Image (tube, rainbow, N blue to C red; front, side, top):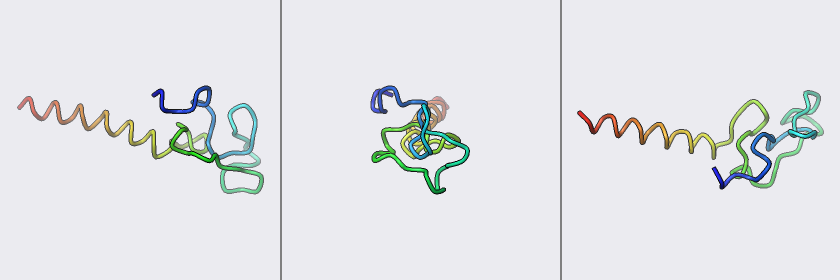
Length: 73
């Protein structure tokens, strides 16, 4: 996971500030919330959902494991 922003693994890409870029009064889509420039470098989109990049990372792991198991039969 070295492709993700250093020190920002817990920080949301879209949010309203603070140490984790999450503020219940300014969640993504509300006034005061801003999105990062490169969502593919973040793990969390809005503090509650992962970014497309991390979902792709997870899916590759699941699919490679599933294909390995299928090939054993």
